[in-house]
Length: 318
Image (cartoon, rainbow, N blue to C red; front, side):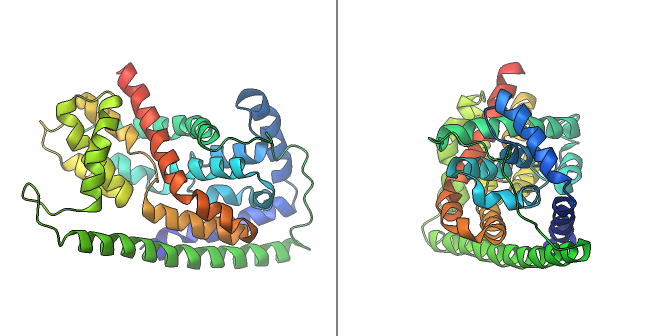
């Protein structure tokens, strides 16, 4: 289902962005973002455009808008792009999550949209704190790009070739990362059951995330349950976490706690997404492979912190 229904969007976006760069439409947009974001958030237009696109697109589709700039980004800028991908969800799953949560959280669609919008500037903040950029580079304002193709048909062909390589690499990496998680759970499952349930990575991480949920504003009595949802989201994915949130007994979490968790879970920061991101970015910018791989686990932490900050803001306001 993923390979033939969701991921072909990557193929189309690859062709579309290559055409827009060849037609010289995207470079002025990047420069416009650069002028605006240098004054407000202190970042360049390339990073800003990718982060803004993450509000509606996935972690691979958004960087396609700045593909010619990826090789020129500083390490700090690259990390912001990665955290931006981990701190939001794609428009392709927006309706699914809204429909899933509607019975337990009123106006879930509006809350998911707000979470995606708030996640962008918070991701920039977290990225700058975790991997500061000593050079203070702001890529995208005056960077000159070489020709991306020799003609419109060549742009379509190049975009299709890159998109196909992206699609295949993403599928392969996703299979490997999910398989490794299940293998780790199978090994840990050899341990004796605790409290009548088998020990898993997501359960262990859930206990570790309980204090974080308490810091977001949940009562301690509900923090272990909420931490379990964060563990499921990080080890597996946010879809399964939202399914479990929708199926919780009415007395497991208060309406306020459910609302906070909707925001805290609204991101792609999990190990399966890490495989997708590594495959996507290293295909688009092979020369940045070492940086992408070394920043991978940090990006999961950064994306999780970003959604938790948004959840904490909701906890203060609600």
